[in-house]
Image 1 (cartoon, rainbow over the protein chains, first blue to last red):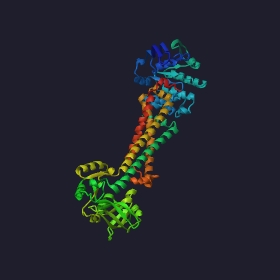
Image 2: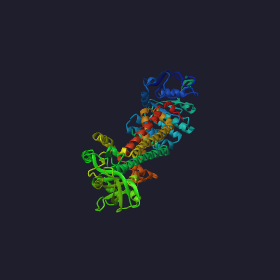
Image 3: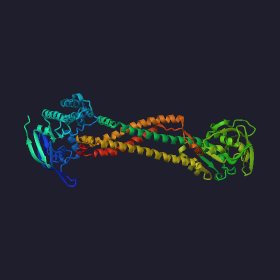
Image 4: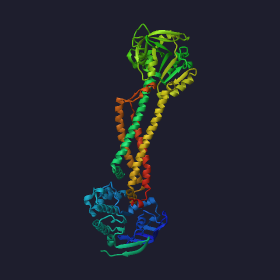
Length: 231
Length: 406
């Protein structure tokens, strides 16, 4: 299987605090194409920092993040913008849709930045919204959608441009049980159908129970890396 | 770009009331600026009409001694030759050669100090438009036994005389001898300046010169130039050409008026500057607030790969759109306002006292079309400048932190 992300000796130290904080310590991990991975651990264990660093939103203090043969740890900021746009999908805890755009426009937005042809873009956005069960909400604005629906739009947005992998930072944290299960079903299905690598940070046992791989971080270091058969 | 415009447009209407407030501020700012400018221009136009054009002209030439002693003794040497030379200059439109002196006017009831201006009726009409200033009587056309004069309406009231009345003028001849002669009032004129109207008498130059003893004597040459803005340069040139004569332009002749206009000019610059700065800071504040409210959203845009330049452009575009809406509405409303006020006039309360300085208490504001565009452009440029700081703040956001902002 193809390795999508490989981190070696990844460390991150925050020095703008009274005492330096070692958020990540020598993390060596690989993620294969199509994996459905949960990064778990207590608060402050480095989950979010890890996602930020492999998502190119933050720079590591040491180590490498190899994506598609490129080390993004040493990449210039201007190139990182383009890299994120073309290779990485993001799902955030608080949905973070663009409030002035409709569901269709939100899902199309990344493809638009990628300058994809309009027709294909619209077709793909429509298809993704159908896949997440929102074909009747194409022209609704985020304020007209429930939290669960907004997060489904966010998932559709992250997956629409067919990125190499999707990073989701506690995607179910703000959802009720039904919406959370619904979202997980959708993500699990898309993970298989589209063969997209999904990496979650989560506290949520419902997500952990669906993940085929669970990596536990403690104090910024990998404590456990477990594989599960969830078919 | 289309989507960027769409997002910017929708963003500015997210907080509708805030956008309406700042747009209204822009509209009022532009209306204030244009109104001030229109009033300033109206004052200038009216001042040229009433004071420079109708009373003192752009430039006057005298014998140097005449300024301190306005008497027939201080005539311009070869006055008619000088006047002829001046008439031939291409930068001079009109010349009026006058025999001017101070004297006394007496009616059966009253007497008062006056300035007597012996003029050629035809050239005087072309120089000061005296004929058009008449409010009663006729313009040197009646064939009376006594020589005719045209006097200010207020002077007529003071002397308690009317058209057809006889007055006696007392003045000095070229030798300094005092003489008196009777004249018949043929017409009454009215100008804005109260003082000018209370003290000025126009008579035929031939009638005056027949009494003073020099049939071709002149003490004053009033000049109307082609380009009103070049009065200083032409006056300077005339001083060099005629070093033996006293050449003064309207700002020398009426320094109070000149000072008042200078003050108005400065006030206008400050006023327009303060209005535009105030509106720009208001806009800056509005956009900054909207940026601070959208930190998480902007973080997401940066996180998913929208380039900083695009985020910057989006913020600038939002400001530009607000300034365009406010700018166009402000210019449109200003145009309507100025059109209406130009017809109805603006009465300045308590400005009657300014008539002493040649100002009318009623002004008719007017500005030409290019000025509207200049103000509009200025507002948009300042608005874009005002958006730079909020836009800079927006692109300095760290996406990893911004997406988690509360």
